[in-house]
Image 1 (cartoon, rainbow, N blue to C red):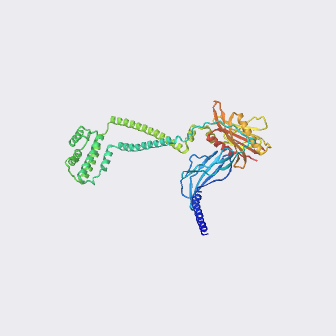
Image 2 (spheres, rainbow, N blue to C red):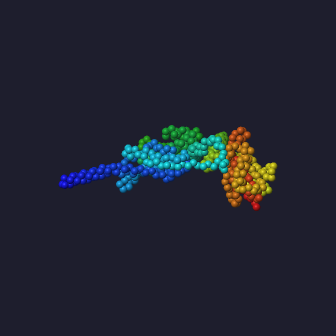
Image 3 (cartoon, rainbow, N blue to C red):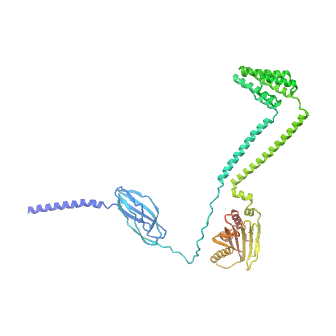
Length: 537
């Protein structure tokens, strides 16, 4: 009995050990359920080309290295936008989110497969999602289709090419004008000084020479050098005496000779006074003498007297000399007159260039060129327009010239104006009011306009339409666009047109304006015509 009991206890212990071992073994097995991958889409049904927001969530229990395959493969789907991997720590887990914006252009039911995902270099894939891609219905019956238009070659945009050259030219011109004005002012001052009589220039120079601040010997040396230089310059200029290169004794001897020959009636006292000043100047310059301020001031006054006495001592001119001098003065006046005229033309030309350049800067090259060269369309815009009322169902409008009436085969009335210079035309058609529905009326208006343009040689016609409300409350159906036209020179020109359809005064009024493409002034003319339209009841 005891033996059986002991056997039972042993079996129970073995069972307990097995249970504990199994539990311990199962813990790591259940812990290996991470990572958890979830696939989320905002919709499972789309039309071709619509966007799908596709999101993959990865949940793990520890920070891991997440990598997505660079070669994304979503079957028939295309990636519109790929977002960065977003990380969020939530309690003990880490949530990684990867978002994509996708689209599909193949109709049908397609599986959206997950890209390859590597978690710590281990490959995983999220669940696939079934997406229904529906085709888009196209109405090929009720709507009218047109052939594909030919490719139109566009010229390279050259707007503003002149600006850098213009500003460079403006700066150079301003610098040139400034340089000329500066030299003109300086030259005028120099000429003004030269035109003064020699005695006046010499006396003015002596008065400007101050003797108050003389202190050092060098100051006296410079002072006396200027004193003697002023007087010697006067002798050189007014009595044609070689004085600047002469010594004191040589200069006095020359004055004595001129006195003895009768060329200069100087007093002996004047010569002696001048000689005393020169001797003092020699002592100051060569013997480093210091005569003092009082003597320096006194010598300056003495030299003023010498200059005035010398001017009085110059003999009067003979009759022949006076005649020569008169001829010389007349020739001098003529030369001055020529110089003034030349300067006037240079100044006028410079101002013209400056005004021209400034006008280009303010109004633009095209506007200035059109004004100077004469643009025919701009001329039409600027001229006085003619206001007139036309037709049995009257419409009043303003145009550059009056519209002329043409013969018509039906009950309609046709008026037109054509400008060959500006390649612009205005047509007006007036007829009784037709009783058609609004939808049929608009479609017939467009078709009728296209037919009319084609009869006049238009090709590749583009049309747009809009409702236009004039300032006086009148409604109009507006059709506008462009077309190709072959001119007389067999050149294809692109033209633009504007057509306005009215139903007023118990009739129908149609205005068609055709003009050259990219003609700014023609566009202004069209706008002005539109604003001038009036229906008088």
